[in-house]
Length: 276
Image (cartoon, rainbow, N blue to C red):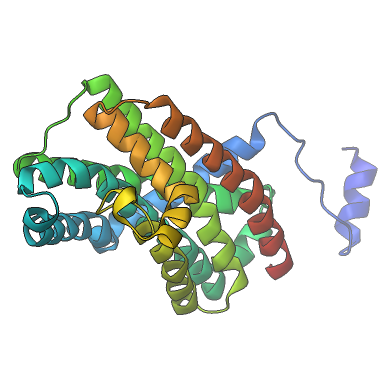
């Protein structure tokens, strides 16, 4: 910038400052920086992880030891059937926290600061969702660890187990955008939490999580068969237990994940722009 231009800008208080030159992969870099902020916030308040540490253990213990004998005739057999589905359910329930945290940050004025930064408007949302992936990793680790302590064993190999975990994380990441949209639409964090659970309950429990699909009433079977959470649970079971036809549930889960991301991510960003 020349000396004359600099003098003009200094003398004109209404002059618009130069924006930094756009750089490649700026959105990725900014999103990762904000993901780091979200991760640090979670690590400094570890009580935020109670729902992904205690909740899966409580659900496993209650369902296996109260219902296992009646449904499967054996708590061990029922644990094998239930645990992959509990892993999906825990990730889905955990995804509701993303919208609540974003709504809280907006209420506190954090996003006013983000607006003044030379970053993409979608970067705070992407960063928050990426930062919450640590919750998914903790949830899966706790679920598998507790399951192994009480007798769960995979029927395939470590690579397929890893594939199941990654598939569930991808599904949870894409589903988180539903929670982000809710967090952008409602005015209070409590409302974001309540509405998020209201959406997730029929998605998680309207599945074959606890019993096989063919034991359900006909009208409920129709919903279970088109529920994306059902496909995620069946894919996790297939990869972890070695049940046949694993490719079908895996492909359906990936397809549903892509649909959720393509539909709800743009809606969430649009709602964020209108609100801020």
